[in-house]
Length: 101
Image 1: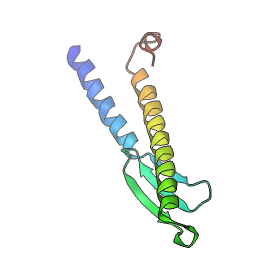
Image 2: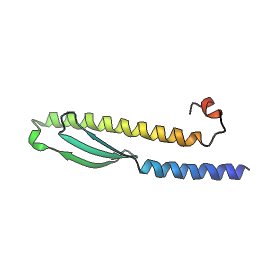
Image 3: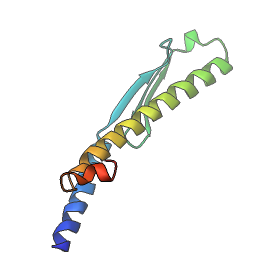
């Protein structure tokens, strides 16, 4: 019985990791100068910058920081939602609320 539970948990963890790996978040700065993509592990996968619209280095830094932070928050939110949803499947009905899932 315990072996079955542990096996089920290991399979669920593998599934969660695979689902997280498939997450891709696309974001852009409010003015459209910066476009970027992050994966479910918060790794930057794509970045494009319209350099013709950059006035100075400080502007570029501010846009990058703001856009990256917003994209990181979006990835973290999606990972948390996915994990919560997948973990609730492991618990008997009603216990998910006990653990805040």
